[in-house]
Image (tube, rainbow, N blue to C red; front, side, top):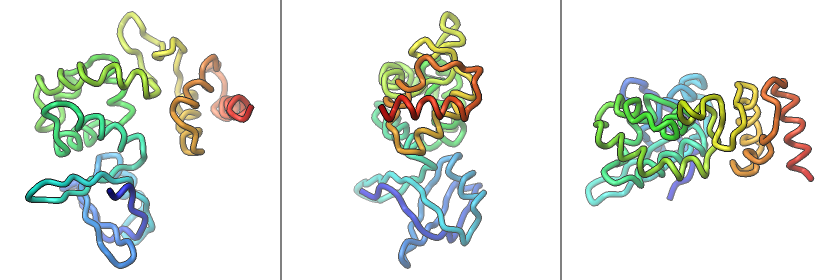
Length: 207
C-alpha cells in the first residue's frame, strides 16, 4: 500500500482531477480530491509536494487516489466501506465538499447535500448517512450543528467557533490524534483567540 507520495509535481489538470508526482524518477499518476487539487494548484507544477494516497486494486486496473491530508484519506476509506460506494463515487463526493464538510453533513443527516455529488444518487447518499453517522460522530471532530435540536453544539455539547476549528487543525498538524484534540478542546471558550486556545490545549496535552 502506498500511503503517501513526496516529490515534484510534474503535471496537474483540475478539469480531470488528475496529477502526476515524480518520486525518485518514477511518475505516479493519481486522481485527486477537490481539496488536494486546490493544494497542488497553490504549489504549482515543479514544486515539491506531499499527497496522501489510497491504491485501489482491481482485476483489470490499479488506480491511485490522492488527498490533501490524512483526515481526507480516513474519510475516503470510510466512504468506500459503505455498500455500493466505490472509489470513484467517494472521490466525487470529496470533490464537491471538504472532509470536514462531509463530517458535518453526515452528522446533520443531510443526505440531500451528499447526493449533489456527480454519480451519487439519493439512495446511496441516504445509505452513507445511515452507515457512517455513528462512526463519524465517534471518531471525528464535528464543527457544525448535528440537528436543529443541537444547533450550535458539537457532538460533545460544546459550542463551536472558527477559532476552535482553526485550533483543532493546528493541533492535528502538530501530530496529536483526533481523540486527543477533541478532549483538549472540551471546555474551551469559543470567544478566545485561536492562539490562546492552542496554548491552553497544549498545556493540557503535555500534562
